Image 1 (spheres, helix red, strand yellow):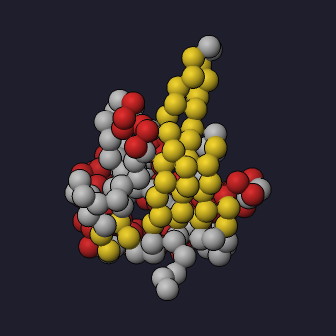
Image 2 (cartoon, one colour):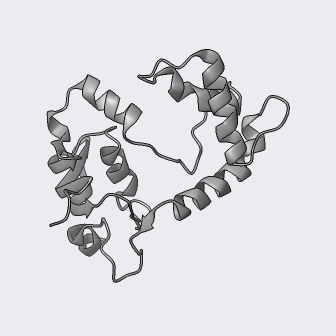
Length: 186
């Protein structure tokens, strides 16, 4: 018998109401993700990919359906518990980088360590951040800027993600986090 999925989503739906119009962003998405799997979420613009990722990242709530994360129903979590999940268990590498524009790359990398439950000291945060930037190839002897790291970090992070996970193929024959109802309606 296999272990429980890390992520289990059943009949997930999300509807936005804009005035008198209802926009059905998700229409019954169901998927299980096992530990170590690499899963693609694909679809055309407007098909609900970002909405789905926001729900998985505990940044938004579904209109209906169930999201189980490591055996716990996310809908039962308090705001503090959701914040801890976002801080300690879920990570995203955004295509647009979402860095703070007024800070250097090293300060952007240090920021999540400020919220760490391990109470990491300033000098240790700086050392860890510099090491992380060196791993992705965007560190110099001087203060590292955001723009100097964009291409290097994007390429390195994608490479590391590919090499450090077990993949679930994203071919048309594989299971994907898409909704039959959503595909049929487009």
